[in-house]
View 1: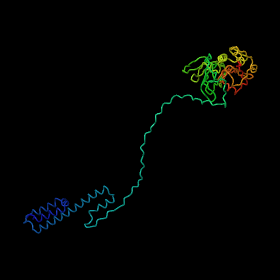
View 2: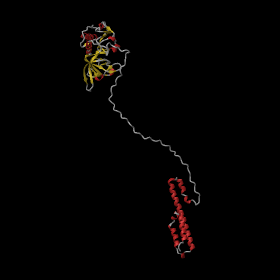
View 3: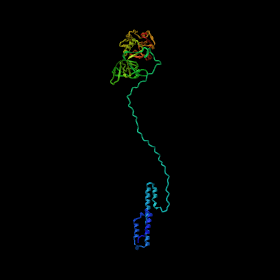
View 4: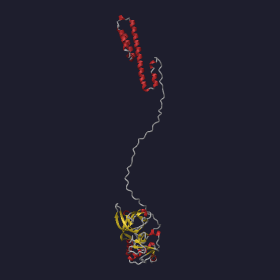
Length: 389
């Protein structure tokens, strides 16, 4: 006898309620149900058949339910293993043993733990170092000495001074070299001299070659390309420079870039006679000093004045003691080019612009000097108007 439609509908309804659980029923249990329904009525009692069907269905249902629960528990455990701690996984292992109808456990609610790690300071991105390009440094230039300081309260103003009435630029017939590097006291220049053994000695700006001008012998350029004015001297002392070996040198080399070259002087006079005296005096610069020397190559102070005046046709005493007593005495502010500067024991010739020329002593020979500077060391006491004008 076949299974009635009522029983088949009940089985399908029950299987639908079970859903996924009925699918897990074993093939063996389903075969039992089919065998029961396929058996002929003659081989089985209807009530026994119904009882057998019910038993098989209950067994299949229980087996399917248990299999579904175990399957769900296993899936839950796999999910929990991903995010839950180990202690919670152990609690989930017993889900299959929880009896039906038991109250659901309250989930543990743990307060969220605040982050305890201190914020890390931002690390600044290192910036590449930048270096400004420096211009190439030019070759060092010697330091220019400071400008000269005024050392006198009232500068001396001489008669017919430059730019005043009667002043005129007069050619002197020779070339004169003027050091032109200003210092605190004088205008000076870098120089050099050749010693008796052939070696050279340099003269720095600090040696103060304070003579206002020198007589030019020639211009020359050395092996390094430096241009020089070669001047005539006869000295072992030039300004504040002393020749190291004590020998007298006949040439003073002055650096051309430190000097001015002139062939004339500003004379505060229009007198030809006075101009002649000045020309003769400057032409003898660098001559040798010799006691009682009267020229033309060597002189003492009175011999120099006597020689220059005699060349201009003017007669003067031979000794400085007699010259000091000459007539036509004037004050320093009334001096004119060609006049005589004097004191007992020394004399010279004024050439204008506050300068004079004299045979100073054995260490210097015939040199130019600033009247104001010289008067600080050994002041003149008398000034003689040589022409009486």
